[in-house]
Length: 164
Ligand code: RB5
Image (cartoon, rainbow, N blue to C red):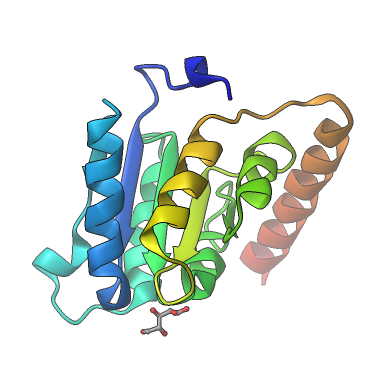
């Protein structure tokens, strides 16, 4: 694996809902032990009882406004977090519970947010998935026109919604 991608200006942010507090802690410690700086938004700390949509939305907005370049969202399944993050214009997220998908999420799909389910995978696999995702970058090439098309269709959809 190429470890050079973990450059210092990569700003990483993380958060989770009540189903994933232990896994989030594990991932934060793992990243810190690798010397990777990560900001834990800890939305639940200030708003106990918050549901995954507002937690995921809060993080996705920070990707949208450029405060962070990459984000990790963890809930019970990873599904709800991916769904809400993808509702934020210009933000792309995918659920990964295997290493190959985590690599492709960056290399082919250019997604900024990785989501995982704490009730689906164990902590060792989650750490390996995070590493694979962090060490992968968008490759362009044949994936570029596909990602461009996704952005174009997204714009069309948001414009339609705004016009209504
Ligand atoms: C629990 O609230 C569960 O619904 C949530 O963590 C997540 O799995 C949703 O997709």
